[in-house]
Length: 435
Image (tube, rainbow, N blue to C red; front, side, top):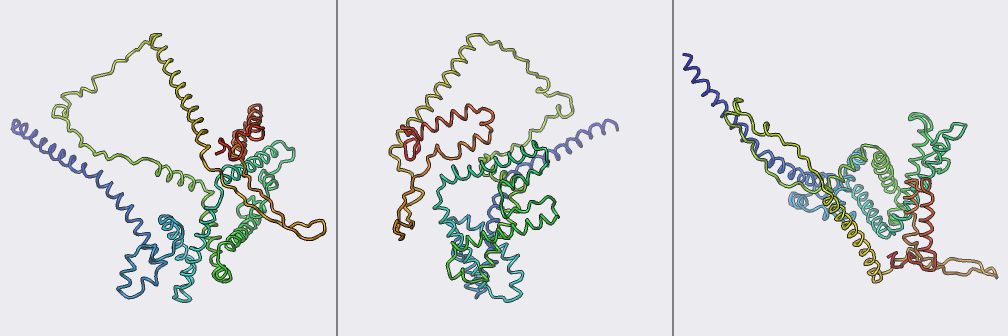
């Protein structure tokens, strides 16, 4: 009896082992392919669901016709049903998704109770499309070099200077003052006054009201330049578009989220996901099943017993000299390639076209000696050179180079003056170095 049970036990155990091994190896193979296909389907269906939502919200009149025209309009691309917002279809898709959410939640919620007519929504969409196209044309006409390298660094420099002055003044003064009051006294702004100290105080409510009024004035000024006169003279449309841009898009969408920490982390995460190279397709190998002796512990794994012996390497002076020699040669070659690329760029800059003028000839009226008006032309088309822009002083101010090493700041300013204002004019506007 004991011998029969001893014989049956390994068989039952082997049968259980075979079932476990078969069940554990089979489902591990299609997991990777299933996750890849799910990601692809999600990316495809997300755009299709967005387009379907936009068509249901903004293209209701086209989809409410007869059955034949409705079927044709459903399968039409979005560019044939709605006016283009920008020159990119992907950007139009995202903007139209935002407009659809706003109109569905904040316009249809009260407008559908008045009338089922969709002409008002179509007019709002056409006005927004006209504004976005006009803004795109104006943005393309902006001097990006002066904006990025001169104007924005100047604003950052003023902000950093006022911030440091406010906090240094509050610490050094015998009379304790709030740094925010000092900062807003240096840089006053109507949308940020009065300075709120508590979230539920009267000052915070007044500041929120002033900010809302400032946003409306800003949007009204922009609409007066981008809207056609017939739409600008329509008060209901103008008020509705102003409220959509000032309160819903800028107030809640931009100002309400862009200053939050989670929004910054989300933007950085999405940018890193876009910049990260795609992962290679690696198929998962099924795990190797241990043999019978290793399973019951009768045979130890060879990898556990084998220990790597510590290797002690002794470097000879010849190896040290050889390594130092090749490092010196590497740095020398890198310096040579850098200098060669610099002089090659200088020689090729002679064939580049000059930088476009930021301002054209302008005429203005002045009084002459006899008291009559006369027009005089001023030619203020000289752009600031790249070396003379505010980017360099802003970088120096951000790292406190003028406080840590003032001699280096002075030397850099002197070299900058020699390259721009001296008789050489190596870095002057439209010179080889400037191009």
